[in-house]
Amino acid sequence: MEQLHKTRAASKLSPAAMETLAIIAYKQPILRVQIEAIRGVASGEVVRSLMERRLVKIVGRSDEIGRPMLYGTTKTFLETFGLSSLKDLPKAEDFIAGKGIQS
Figure 1 (cartoon, helix red, strand yellow):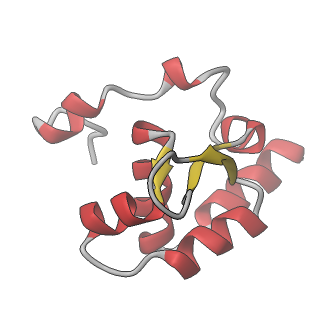
Figure 2 (tube, rainbow, N blue to C red; figure 1 turned 180 degrees about the horizontal axis):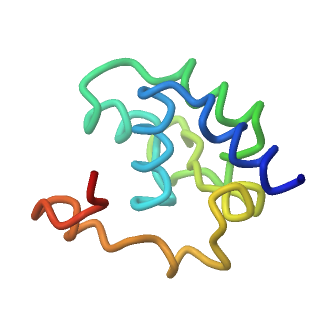
Figure 3 (cartoon, one colour; figure 1 turned 180 degrees about the vertical axis):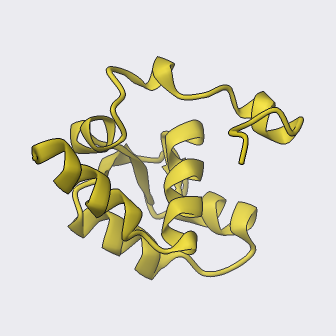
């Protein structure tokens, strides 16, 4: 039952949230400005909602001017997606080359 709840929680993420979460998972630690550069749109609200769901957390601060926050995924992220570590993520190259999840 707990696994079903976790799957439902993940399935309720919007496409923008899933995209942002994938960027954070593969590029962490990452600045919000870097997320926005990849996505091409403002992402502050999406990152905030992922933090509320405990899928993303602040993992530190950059040495850049203003010391912006760095984001990374949480243990809840790993549990929700059935991963034991970030090493279990599918290879990003497989998705870029079109070898990712089959329909």
